[in-house]
Image 1: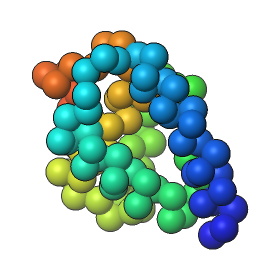
Image 2 (image 1 turned 90 degrees about the vertical axis):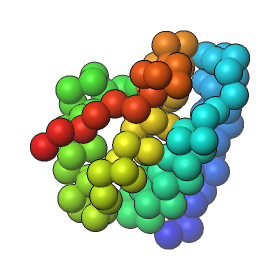
Image 3 (image 1 turned 135 degrees about the vertical axis):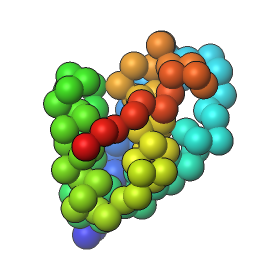
Image 4 (image 1 turned 135 degrees about the horizontal axis):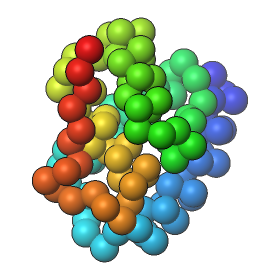
Length: 104
């Protein structure tokens, strides 16, 4: 548990740098809610993975698997997706495209 928290804390500066470099718009309410879910649900079981290391299809497949394992409802997945997209594609995320649909 401590190791996961340490890994999370070491990940924060990188996220902030990516966020600051990639977007000038403040995060939306959905993105903030997604960040809270992402840090609360995902860090419980494993370290954070760099979402930029996965292509869109592979990331979607992981989100489908993790939705089942973490028992996330569709709205929670949508919110997490909204936040993670700011990490994956920071320069292209806008309020209108920040909520990718995960289908099963």
